[in-house]
Length: 263
Image (cartoon, rainbow, N blue to C red; front, top):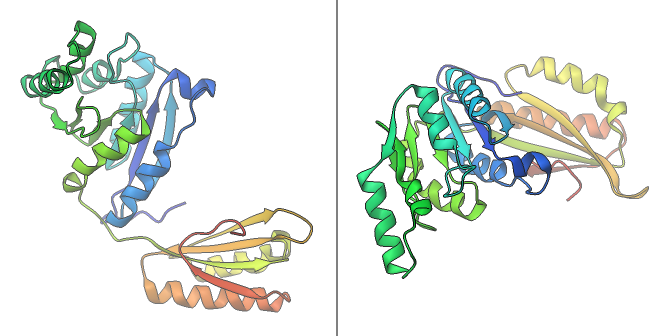
């Protein structure tokens, strides 16, 4: 879990799409958004995955936006019949939805320049909840939008990456969460558990975790990861983790950042 304070904003993600729940499409947007938010000092507190169902989207978005500082939704803003996210977001905020003049102009210009027919289905992507601000889409042109603390992006990973370029200036960051990994090759998580628990109590202002890996009888161990915002405390905790590994006959390897496995 993350340490949440008043000056540390926390975000959530709502992944929307039947294809995600069926396993036809693999989610990579969570990792992309989490890595994007890290330099702003905004950790993720929760990720939900919901189907293309109007009421389920409303329920999830309302629950998340009242609990977290920022909510990112991905998926469901394309031209097809099951792209219902914009309507659901409008309903969640109890506002209307209609064609947005700026969005319509962006789409008209995009399809004209590409010499592609601007069909009624494609025109649907200009429907934006009232009072929402557009999020630019440099990849395919169809914009996302922000209303309140909810930022609605496309579902295609490359488009998500592009749209995030118009998101950073909207965020109020917190303290950047730093991390250090101490790898203990050849040791077992159960051997370290009791002592690790005592260290977690001693460093209650930090977050400690253990992540075992096993590739073969010769290549296994535990990655001990400590996270926090105070560099001095983080360094002290990493030193104590190294001492713990040595006490159990291991040779610790310290690395900056997360490394949960033996890579």
